[in-house]
Length: 281
Ligand code: 13P
Image (cartoon, rainbow, N blue to C red; front, side):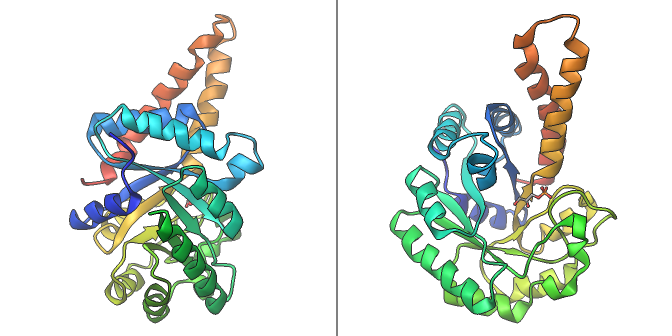
């Protein structure tokens, strides 16, 4: 089927009291594996592109990536969403929308609250004209390498979240409740009481970033307390690169370079089958 709006996938997740999973992907191997497992398990899924993977790391291009996901989605029955992850650049976001991204994130979490509201509102107003969904970030989900997940000053406050959602009209909001991007030094502990408060104070889907390495028991509770989108990147990338390395080592003798995609996709799909069990739709 055609791509399904991310807001529609999150609405269904909310109805089922669970979370959709959103995977950062850079290329066909990763995207194909996500779509294939979603179809096998009959679960909706969201594919995200992190801007730097396009304009800095030369992994892909905006329109090329959007077209690839659109084509993959059309070959399956399960709902597939496409989303541009973290961007703080209004012009880049507009470029992504024009390139075919039906959902974008405006990350104003480094700005003051007033500035975050202003830029988010501006993106929402323009994106609506294109029927595009918008995710924002409030508080700041930092980096695990800096132990930002322990810095309470960066956490989202329920009263501020209520004001932010009302004033911006955003479709979903990423909250800082004890997760961070990258590899955790110590096992993170989500502030589920704070999540409850934010959930009661707001009426839009909440998003949990920094999904690699959070214990499943904590996620299962968080998914019943308003988290309807759960972002995973680091552990998926790590497995991808490890699998390529493993293939190169194992297959040095055999010399068949064309088997690499299937070998790697197989490894990714085994991981995805386990991870997607967290989504109860
Ligand atoms: P991880 O890379 O820590 O899994 O986080 C992914 C993410 O939040 C993307 O927005």
